[in-house]
Image (cartoon, rainbow, N blue to C red; front, side, top):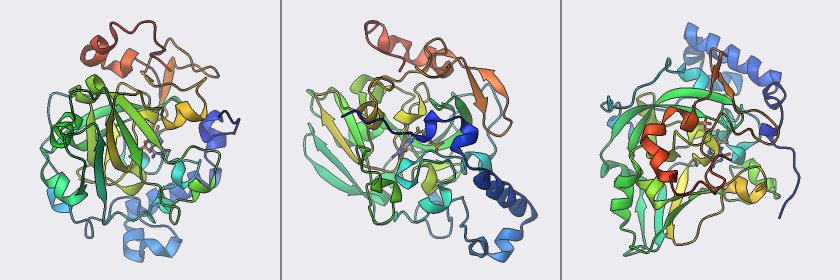
Length: 324
Ligand code: MTE
């Protein structure tokens, strides 16, 4: 199925983000700085707080967690308000200002399912799962295929730890992940030309790579809904569309999964999606990126700067479309 639809990220960013959203965001930041929104109550402006509600999240006591010093940045950490109010989460809409809509997503109960080629298929409650995992904080860069980037402190655990928990069989070659698809709270699902639910996949080697992370927290707090609560994938050497949010299912399989964007537009988005400044998107350059917050334009790095960790994964795959 190849339907030509106009997506948010096909437009210049100025067009993709309505000015009203920018304006609201500025007003919100100003208000937060002055403490006025908290005092007045976020509801007054018809907008909820962008950050997680620490009082109501049953895992809030887990954060902050110790930072793993191995993963260092070459740039400043992105301002929190910028990172959590500029999102791609098509289940809530195709523009960047979906953070208030995303607050409708129900987070509890949240059940995570493990199935396919596993010793035993099972479902686990997220709160039980996260308390069984070794939590740490990591500073990672994030590079969207739309050519903007951020650098943020994720909290969570390695996907390798989760795979050990899931106990896949030796025949598993890929892990396929699926996002919640809740028609009641996700207006984006009404766009029936998209292949919902959002799906992404990795090879088992990629999934077990030390960089591959499941984020459950951000900026030392539970991860906000718009950023992919309660758990999302983080693969910092790949374009951001691989970083599937709000995961409800991990399936182990011997067939390469077809991701949401590969299914939607396979001529432009593929399975590997590794960052490479020298391989342009068919309709724009990937040579540089706009840093969220400062709007500075900086050169994009091969594998987003994580070459030493991941280049070996692709040594025998040079005939594949590794960079789209
Ligand atoms: N996951 C789901 N379920 N739905 C989405 O639309 N967008 C992807 C990725 N994960 C997306 C998703 C894209 S294109 C990017 S760049 C990142 O989420 C954005 O993450 P952020 O909003 O935390 O910056």
